[in-house]
Image (cartoon, rainbow, N blue to C red; front, side, top):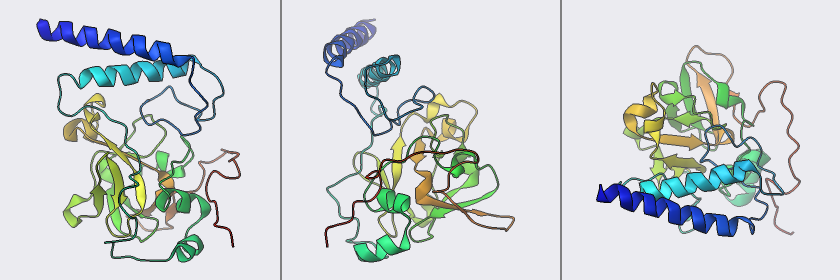
Length: 246
């Protein structure tokens, strides 16, 4: 009973603090990976109900941390570890720029995040393997993929047997072969009842543009930086790549 009182007090405290700071919320062009259904647009200029829901979600996540050692935490691209040193596949930045599309480069080499529902791979349901778009290392099996409703391809587990995926402090997920940023991993798999994530307790939230799907039945590979059918997204000019001055 005392524990529940502490939880309630913690939640109320978080809500009060978040309410006091809500009016100072500024425009955020980075998509949130917290929400399963609410976040449908990452370009916002004022404080909407979706912002309140997101703030409430953060408060709840903090409260859950009172009684669990594995809270749902945001995962950010880690600037503390090089994306080149220690990885077997090495290219210069100019080589990466020529090998990858603008979207792939922004995500894999700069730790960016694609917009929700912007990858054709979010709806990919065929049997096959998802490989790294930077070095073709097999990363995820189709059997581990599930519908999370977040707008990003989600997996319950990675192909850990071959050490293909590296999880850094802060839960950033990288390709262990080329160091490319793939996405984030969360400890909220239990929320997705009836999916593989419910068993593993994990949700690998991966940028589709960082992947290429290879169907088991053969046929053409599907590059993840392609838009879903009948979808058009107008990207900001600086959304992907800022080439260094020459």
